[in-house]
Image (cartoon, rainbow, N blue to C red; front, side):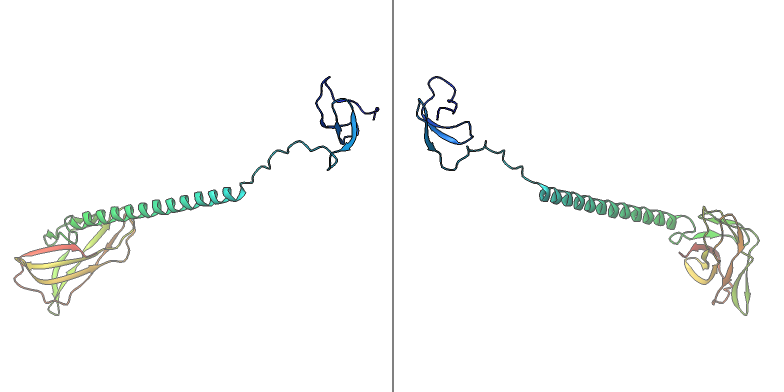
Length: 203
């Protein structure tokens, strides 16, 4: 046992210490003994605790974030669409209330020009009859709106607040800036005693 080095320090207390072979041998305070600690090799330094993996937690957090963004996007999209619909309804109601709109018939004079919401109707048109039915001839319209659109109107022959006859006039889609003649028809007889003509969009 003399070839084994002594534990450092002049007064090393008795106990198991690593010897020069790496075994845990008993030091009695003065010399090495034959007693080895069971288990042989000295205990390794305490290993650092294993780092926990947070992969599952991170995946769940990412999925939650994506879900929240998706729901938020859907809400924003629905809110934007609802706002657009509200604006379109407001614009439509505003246009309907303009003179000549569906809710506000415009009084017109036979043969004279008039305008309704960007459609300009030329002078020179006339009311007549054919086979005793009311006719409306030579009514031309120019589309001064920003985009192509078609005209769909009715002209009413009135006496006071009573509608005596209605003439419906339509066109195909008119490109912006172009002029066309309306096709007009009626199933009503020409009244002899009307005192007012009105026009209104029917869409």
